[in-house]
Image (cartoon, rainbow, N blue to C red; front, top):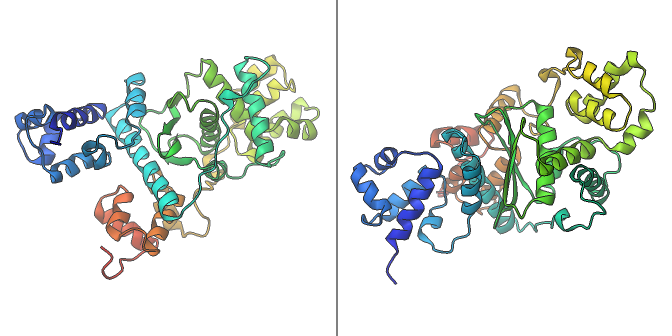
Length: 389
């Protein structure tokens, strides 16, 4: 059967437009004229295999998506996300597309190289709640999850590690849009995928991770969801916010440890609770308000209290191992801001050590320029074996 160049051209055009890449940039990548590139997208120019690989790299897709008719991808979810969030910048669209690639790589490593079995995640959308109140559903589901995960009322020291333990791919990345706190995609093969905006304060990231976890538990059928810090005005977002607050700070702990609050000690009580559970003070204030430990009037008085701000240097990211040198920590922080994670880097390097992937594949998975990739791998003690390419 003849290869369908028209379908290939259509896929390439949709991929290019979704990332707001101009035809001139794509043509320059292939070193052909813009007219010929337009012909390529219309199926009139027979593209070579090497050219498809170059365009796949530019568009942050697996090249097999373009040349295989039934290759499984999250293209429909991504296109819908970009359609519903048309204000996303070019850089943020590329960042999201790279995040999806990392999730695909991580899924491949876990399942194909390390034979790690995926854990089934509850789907609370099918649970028969006795009511239809979104916020209440979030609170109840938080309790269900704490019971299912044997957390009791304990403090969650590393929400990111906990979420990953549930076979969810979680990455952080700096996004240009400060109003985006996180997003969720249900990938047809990689499964549940969460991206957290690394521009946010660390304690805000913790809350955002729990918020997106709720989307994975309730909203996988929707396929994708972008969470905006200032647009939580629908039932799904209310539910996710209430889930996050109750999941991170369980009601029973508050009942057992905070009976009555002396107004004079309110600020200290809020700060100590914030530091204990690694959430911002506003989350604690809302939990206290919900449990009627403070009045609405007191809530309005204290919510902008400057003494409640915990300085960023007093917060420690559990994603950065404490046994690294200062320089390594700084470089790892830079890597996380560009979308990688310590868990993913370790997964990649261990797969290489075991012979599961080549050194060239290892570098490709890091989605970094070759020189920077070499530097990182050298820094973290992964060296090229003779004949490894």
